Amino acid sequence: MITDDPDAPAGTFVHWVLYDIPPGTTSLSEGVIGVGIQGVNGFGRSGYGGPCPPRGGAHRYFFKIYALDTSLDLQSSVTKAEVETAMQGHVIAQGQLMGKYKR
Image 1 (tube, rainbow, N blue to C red):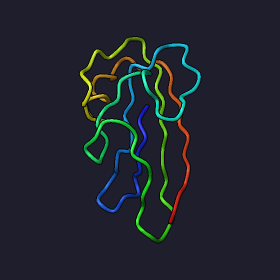
Image 2 (tube, rainbow, N blue to C red):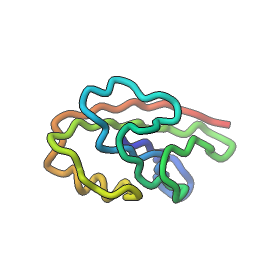
Image 3 (cartoon, rainbow, N blue to C red):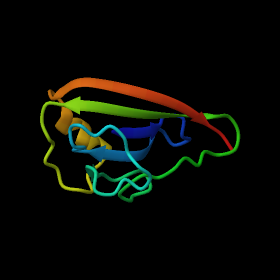
Image 4 (tube, rainbow, N blue to C red):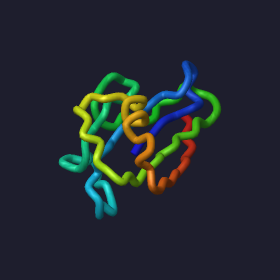
């Protein structure tokens, strides 16, 4: 799962990279401990970093989920780009949810 904000002033900002989520997982609880592997977000940390757009118009936040035919076997602390590269040729389904938020 990749969550990003394409409306960020400096370009697309990554809020969350979570991969190797076990098959059969139907929900994610707050904190998401022990489910999948957390990658590095745009804040330079592992895990989810919430929205904090500048004042003004609403930003779009895309939550993208991918079903793969394999696990990625990557180290933790990988980036969105590294996960997307590793996923190439393995995506069998995908979905997306977009929400808007402004301050």
